[in-house]
Amino acid sequence: MFDNTNTPLITATVLAKENISAAEPLRSTQSKLSRRARTRLIINSSDSKSKSSLQQGRPVVPNPRRRRAQVAPAKLASQFLQLSLDVNELDMTNMPSTGNTLRIPKHLPRAPVRYINPALLPEELRHVSMDYIQDCLVEIGPVLFDSAKSVVADPPRNELPCQLEVQYDNKGQNTESPSHLFAIHSKTSTAVSLFPIHAIVFTSHCANLPALPASRTIFTKGSVTLPVVPLRIPHPASFPTLMHYLYTKKIDQLVASLLPNPIADDVSMHTLLNQIGRVYGLWMNAVALGVCEDKIWPAVDDVWVKLLDALQEKIATTSS
Image (cartoon, rainbow, N blue to C red; front, side, top):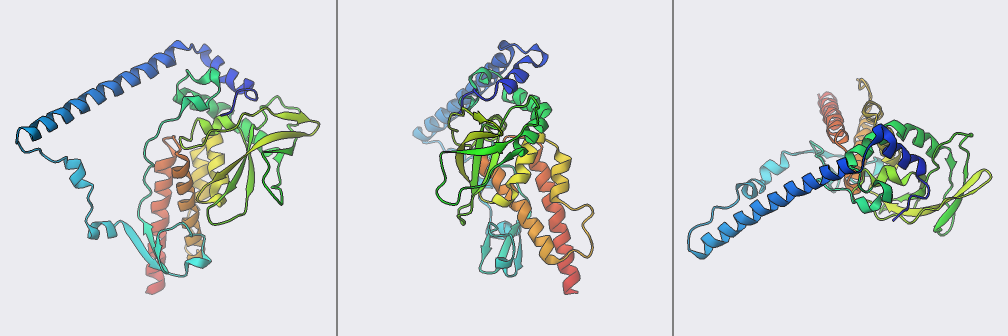
């Protein structure tokens, strides 16, 4: 778990914005908890009635939602676009496949709803609602992103250390330095890429993030020493795109980076499939990290549908 040693400017920005009081977000959180508690009482009451009916010999009506969740094989097959090709030459290693047949899902749904653990935040921000923290980060996120880009970090050739001294030049600006280095890698590769990050950006957006080590940044002239956090994700190649969005929240830039506009008529099948693989990889990363943000999910799915439409048109044109 990281402390707030390196985040005084960020913390001050969140707390000072509109002179927020601790009581208001706390009441909001308590109200949500009360509603959840009432919901649990209703559910428990319903469960008790079901058990009582069963004990008295009366039939219990099955949950209709549970019945609907049992998808027939034919319907399940219709949710995928099947395509036979050599997947080894494409950036689609995470896509469901059988042999050389890809099973491309027709939609990329939102990840199951998770909740951010306030204990992962700086102590001064644990009473503030997560939505409010995210709103404040929209304003300072681009500045923090520039700060992260000013760090030059090369992965060590041998064993990954617990901390690493990296080059850092904030060009005299009064900005917060990065707090950690993410050592990004995948399950299928030993290659590691280092990304300087500000913990508050990720702990306030990613429910599945592991607890981060305490960050007590050590500065020397032209360099900074940061703790290293190994982080395995499905698709390292698309992590920079996801990281940029979490910092800037510019959904138009995210869409533009994922979807050529317009998609060229003469685009090759290889290029189109690699683009699809990249979008799928970014979506898998967001699912794995448990990204809690409303705009990214429908935007990525919309890009996905347009790319699949272009793919099907390409297949039809090629086969005719």
